[in-house]
Figure: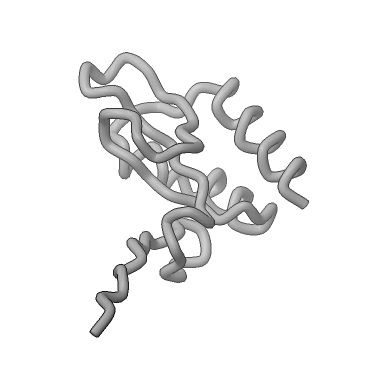
Length: 91
């Protein structure tokens, strides 16, 4: 019998839906708390938060501030800009 690999899932902080990790964008805070970046490969060290590549989800998390609370930092404007660009390119 073949083993089927379990696909890791994460929850989008915008729509709260569980989706395969590979379909989501990861925002990561470095372990020393001084840097917040986007992690497209899902391999960077640090605490991560996930969001769907949808404009509605971006608007929702930006308005609610949930990513900042999840990562325990203030999200810099350049990270929001990079997220917006990433979502626009994925359409």
